[in-house]
Length: 212
Image (cartoon, rainbow, N blue to C red; front, side, top):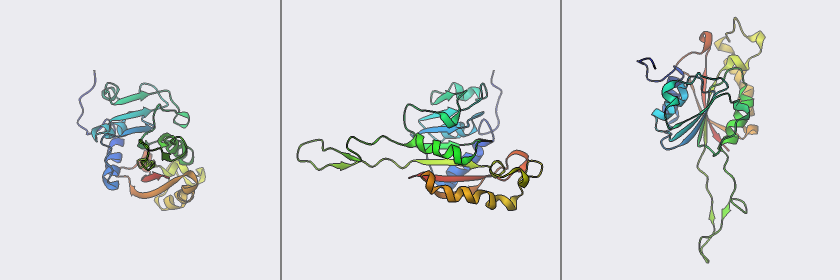
């Protein structure tokens, strides 16, 4: 029997994503999305409440996704699934990421892959529907990634004190990742501070990335 809830989302992670959607002016209404590292489903819950048509909730664990989301027809439960190796039956418009020990340099290429659409026959040009009509260039919808950046998982062990990364080291730790984004096929459009701190009070960031 599910317990009564007073909170807006099934976990505090939902508040983090809600803040990001607002800050980045993203509305996922009608979109097909993927949530990598779903856990209890805070991000997934936020997406469906914001109007997403479908969310693939990808989680390595088992039995952790909230019951309310399990029975929601818009949620495709993908437990016991390693996000690094996940395959989906269709491309998605938005990928959200909330992972722990997995480095962003490993998970971001997966997010990009999940959004890619196959090229039309003959490349990016679609033949005319009728003889004499001009060919039409296919313009795929812009695809987005929102990732919760946890600098303490990107840092080296000697930079941590009791598992906590000092706030003043945040930029030092994330700078190499920021510089690598172009090589990963992604563009950083905006970033914002998470409204809630992470494990043991660690500072977290939310990045809005566009698939290039």
